[in-house]
Image (cartoon, rainbow, N blue to C red; front, top):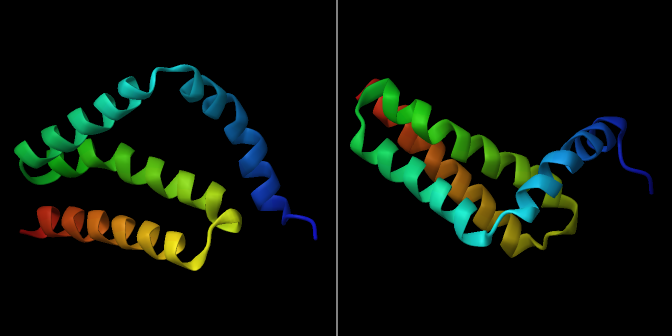
Amino acid sequence: MSAPPLRQRVEQASVPLLRTVSRLPAWATGLLVGVLLVAALLAGGAWSVLLAAPVLLGLAWLAYLSWPRLGAAERAVRLLVLGALLVWAVLRLVG
């Protein structure tokens, strides 16, 4: 079964960035995500959401790319993490 055209376009467009990220040391990407999340936790209001947005979007992008190969448990965990980050972001904006 062939992938839908949108998925194919997203996968093809993602290759250069995935190659670049895969060349980085694992600690570098982890450090970047950690710094963004800590800064988002310490910042207030819209700044916290702006700092967390790249992490949320990156996780959503990776979840989309890996979705067809995941089992039910892995999908549930990814949805749970994305949902928790999204709820946190909305609460920071309104509260």
